[in-house]
Length: 118
Image (cartoon, rainbow, N blue to C red; front, top):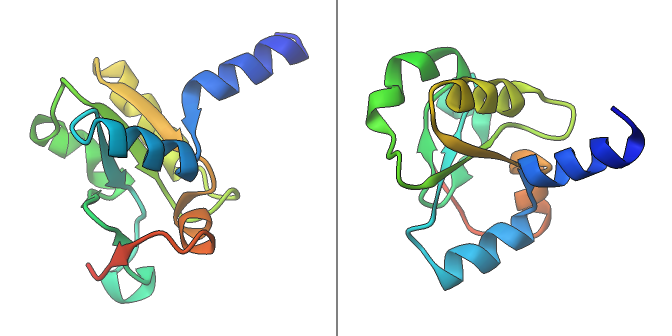
């Protein structure tokens, strides 16, 4: 894979918090956010408003709870975390349409987008 193919693939597999907000305002039923962080609620500092919390380690056991007619947007802690990428692979291997939220919960917070307690 050359650099151009890499960057095209990266764009196809991810969505930024700003893009997510634009799409969800235009079509609220198009995507579903899933928080895949593996941590006790008291360590997580909340979650994105409306997101489901299904830890990446438990995701295979909860696939039947996810809609197949929506794009599943997964997120984890930050850019250094690969839980969302792992979760996206699981979802794609099981026939879901999935994207990774770039920057995870940290990017969402940095933009002062809405969060809620778990």
